[in-house]
Image: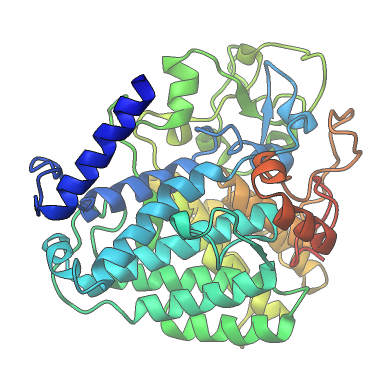
Length: 481
């Protein structure tokens, strides 16, 4: 009888509603129909900061910095021994990518673009959202390989998107960055842009620099296209000084502080120290950046934690944690730097992709990195002495190795980018952990898909594994040849 009464009530309600127009009776007048695009872009940019800060939500951010041995874990010796195999990208799709797509949609659709324009011109909002959206997708595909792309972000239109080939994704990323840069219209500044303050010139340089780095990623798999895209990006104007560096700047606020500070100070965990691989190399080349990158241990010495050694031979206080420039509450994280762009140009010159002096570009990249990290402590005399050392001085025969080694130093605390470059070039020369926990014997080359794909997207997951290869940490992504 209870069920019958419910059905009767529902039928009467349906009939009543069919015969009467109640308009917006069920619309909450205090709730916005569409999200505030200023808040959406702030939220997306905060995620961009998090994925570049190594220690953050999701548990996967520190892994690449461990793979390239800039860091070592000192408490639970697991991540440096590659214990975690499957990593989730779900939060990136449901978080920043959804936000950025919503910004694009609201500023494109005729019914919403007028309201959205109160937070910045439609063109400016779309341009920033497209640049960041492509950046996040590149971050994902570089880690996992073939991933959902063209069918992703369709909401209830497609809950089981197919996996696009990484080559196709890269082709579209170049297009997105090019087209987005042309959409800045000189109109109202974008509210909520906490990265580059709606500075169109800086956003265009960032987009061109992303294209430059992405083009070099093709050096082994498609050098002809890489050369063409590299030259086009360089011509459009890339980062030209340290003043152009793109960073995410944290605040003296527990809700938006550097995650390494949270780990070291607020949580008092101190899970990660610089690795002995990294510290010992910096000592070998008398690198003046060591005191910036590293803090002294309790004995007043710079000592790296043994990489991947189990059980841990010491405690956190025995080793050098990250220095204040990296781990302070307000310490920024680098997303793209002038030094990174110069190293790319040095390699491109060596490859014959561009005209230019590879030696001069290599040395300029080292200088830019030193100036970036040392600030007022930088001196030309120290720089000259540094690049004159046998392990640093440019040699045409060892150019790619030298560029790779110095880029590894300059990309400190940019673990994913450092891992990308190590996979592509093989430099620096690294040895895997003495014992591993993932069944392999080598340093991982990719991250395995989230386990949710095997159940919620089983058909497409089976197809991508058949096409790309075994879903483990050793099947190489398309550009890693």
